[in-house]
Image (cartoon, rainbow over all chains, first blue to last red; front, side):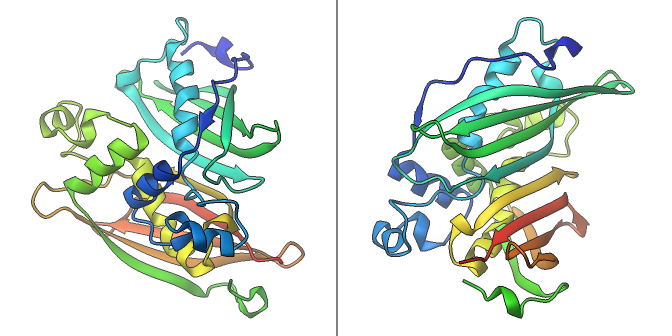
Length: 146
Length: 140
């Protein structure tokens, strides 16, 4: 893997509009049952503008930034050898249907561990107002030759 | 919302056994946009050295927090969630896979009214997520 990836700046992704049906679809897919992800009235009664996305929903938005990373011509990352090592989501506010989210990627660390290398990609996700919503951090392990 | 003041370190706040099938994986692939074939094709999964089709790590992460969401009563109370993927969940085409989740209070931040919940997620008698921690904000 190319160590010069660390610190590289990436362009923000095009805005992702969080659809109500997408929230429901994602919630069903992670076997969520909480009504605030399915029932608009229940979400509004609980003080939210619309359906509340499940905690791991930002992966859908972060995916676009990981695609940017893997598409860098000089990344040296062989996708078929990539294993997801760690994942974290740190919220400033919840994601609700109707949000328009933009993610900006930063590569915060590139390390070698024997034959393997590890890259930490941090995607800062903001709303239409530019305010922070959630940071999604992935560590990808690229397996070397055994 | 649970009352922060009644919580004690070590309390088990939620427990659940979840059954996964191949259908669950296909549904997650569609919803998330992750169409890596190791999550639906046995031939490709075994070709890359896996014992068979495995669940998306992000599916395991996504379902493992649901007992905590239900305990909290509102997904927005989860303000931080992290995991390490340590072992794959192999999903048999006929019998699926059974994942067990235990959510325990690991730490209490009284100043911020934030409960740190530790998840133990087990498949086939082995843990599949390491360092699985959820922060639940219980302040008003």
